[in-house]
Length: 119
Image 1 (cartoon, rainbow, N blue to C red):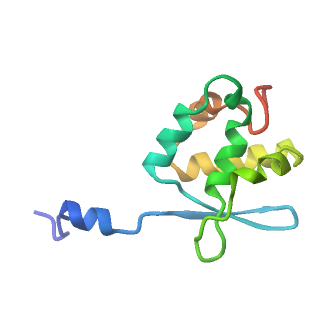
Image 2: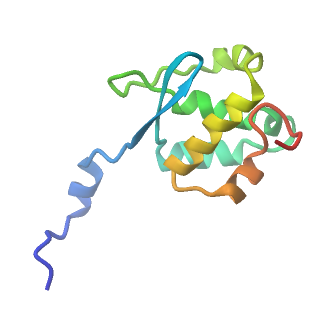
């Protein structure tokens, strides 16, 4: 038998399970936080039709955090992100997918960071 404690559902729900990563970009550090399951479901379900074109950028926006872990991305930033380097955006999306336990096939389903064109 294991010496580790078996958690109750309440203990599981109270645990802080957000993970963070930092990516060098734009001359500094971009800090990203994993997103919760509900946000990922909402993200995946909203990526049909024209929304698929901006799926990766919206994922970046959902994942941006400050040094304290507070979410700082806002939907109103979408147009600004569309003007950023696609290569950099794709690198951020790759890191976000890894952070959330998703692989390259998930990236293909999410589309390219700033358009449906291949990376």
